[in-house]
Image (cartoon, rainbow, N blue to C red):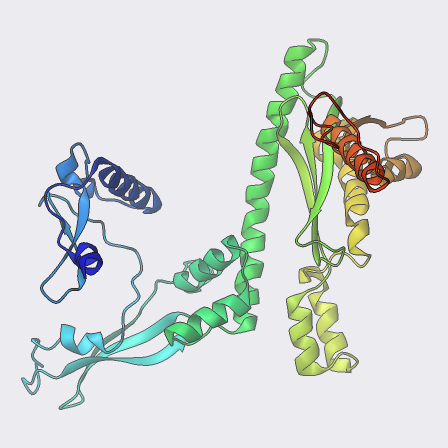
Length: 394
């Protein structure tokens, strides 16, 4: 009983310093995440009394209160609201026609997560103004809330299946897979320009660093740089459908270039299910879809790293005005061997390879541990001087 009373008792006095600091940091993160904040809504957490704490009301429900009455929380851009709450919000508003207080909000149509809502009187059925619950983009005329939902789920590594599950739990209409793919294609197009801008800034910084180190280099000429290259996949097991190869400059640590490989296209899978894979309708559709198809690789997942390196090295002179002459990578020599076989920079140009000391130390350590375990099984202990048998790390 004492434990229950401690858990549900009302906090007395000011909160502790740790809780005050946590509340202040939470407020700071909230204000940083809001795009537009009014100057009058900025909260200054200068003292402990300005921090938000929690207390229990008479019914035992948890409520939020503030010590400072001047604190205001900025209004969020979007709000999730239960449809049944509209009647309680409008219960004191009278209808201009019949003067009854039976106004309610009705949803007339859903477009993804945007809804066409209208205020209708339940008594006389008079309809007031109707509007959409989200703004439209000027150029594409698509609803902004749909674009934000797609961005949000992509940022946490989820796709349409997770978005559909989220919609079912909340009890709202789910976005169609084709609509999700359309928004995904728009994001890819928008991010291409942003990718080019970021890479241009990185390449300019790398070029400036090399020019500072060697004054004989000129800003417009092709320079030779030492880079680190490695590939990664979405999941392990050499069955991943997504892979990426990344080139990083050794001197500055900045990413110079990267390329993404995808082994499937969601639009193609959806059209195969609707039209049939071997039908003339699907062939006609696929011919018009080739330029927008997300699939850009047909080989094995294990060969993505090697093929991505070939593409990045071939376009280095044209796009970055650089030659990646020295390659720093792990002990896997397939990529280095493949680059020299295809003669990226000509017949008489050889790309050098340097070993990563971290990978060398890892391999040596693994080999030593295996030797210790093998001799331990034979009854031979390694070590001495009061140390544990087999503990070679000491």
